[in-house]
Amino acid sequence: MKKILILCLFTAFFAAALFLVYKMRGVSAPSIETAVINGEKKITGDAVHTYRAEDVKSGCSAEDGIFCAVERTVKCTLAPELDGCDAGNVPAFVLGKSGEVQRPTEISFSITKLKPVPESSDISVYTNSDCDAVWFGLCKGTVIYSLTQKDGQWAVTNIYALEQ
Image: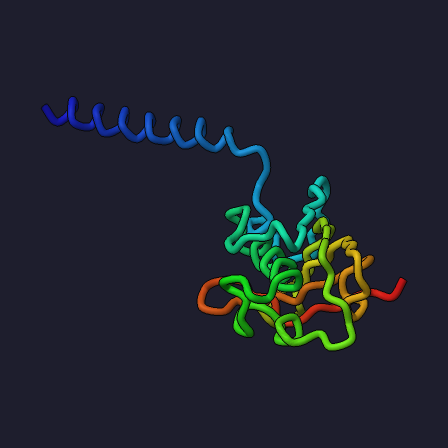
């Protein structure tokens, strides 16, 4: 009886492991969040993500926390009235009145690099971005999103652009 029990447990463990391997093969690429964040990580093959002000909706189109933080900031730039657009998730200037600066109506980006901030748990997400407005110079060319963990989720704390 003891041998049968051990054999059954071993078979169940083996079946579970085989199921997990089968399930993991269905994942086409690792998420950005699970990429190596301990060192600089260049991202290849990231698609261009395009958003229009008239089409944006609350929520994230992916399960990756880093991508979702950048996407939320882009969406809040286009439509600051969306759910989740608050100073705890995006830089406050993104939500403010733009005054004489025209808010973009279309933004596209692709993530090109993740870079950890030395001596902290923060990261910088480098993007190749484009938009249909000037927007403080923060949506064309190489745009860098500074991310930190807040309540277990990534949030954008600042946005920078490299001079072209």
